[in-house]
Length: 229
Image 1 (cartoon, one colour):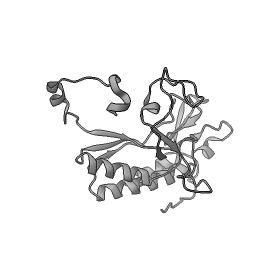
Image 2 (spheres, helix red, strand yellow):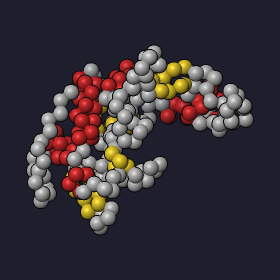
Image 3 (cartoon, one colour):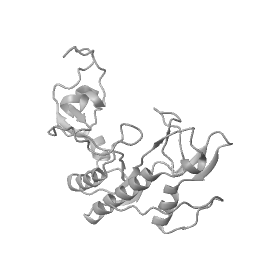
Image 4 (cartoon, helix red, strand yellow):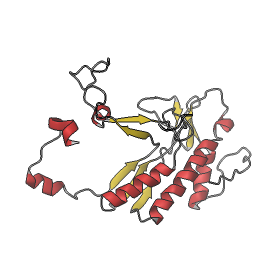
């Protein structure tokens, strides 16, 4: 990092470094997906450098990491994906990744206190769907099931994880995607006074937590779907 980032890194005096070391309350981990990674010391050209026929790129995380990322396994002749593509299209479902990440933090950084501050999957905002149909979110239920299993495996391995936050409780405005994606467990009816309806994943999650087995809606409960790994 020091070699690649150089003078853009902040400078700390020995006294400041001593104050900073171990001063965090916890480590917040956001996990959505994973990538295959391959060393690429050439990397994308930095600002002010021309190379490989590409225009210069301003210094950023993407230029500093010196890694080529791919959703397909490099040694696979068929280009096997790391996991099924969800919405958004950059999100490949790979639950083993959260296990590997948490165990790596445990082993490499002295097993600090960790909270999973974001973890989730979206579906496209399809305006043609009726509200009852939009509440059927099988992909999210499976995503939750598999990632919570992997999280539990990491905890059983000794990872010091004390909390988990799903992204998101409600459908949201995404910085890059606006209202085109729905990450929420609770559906927001943007056309009807922002009415809110829990999706099937919300009921699944409440059942998982042991809090409720009743759906607070008037229409008929759809058949339960048991998701197994």
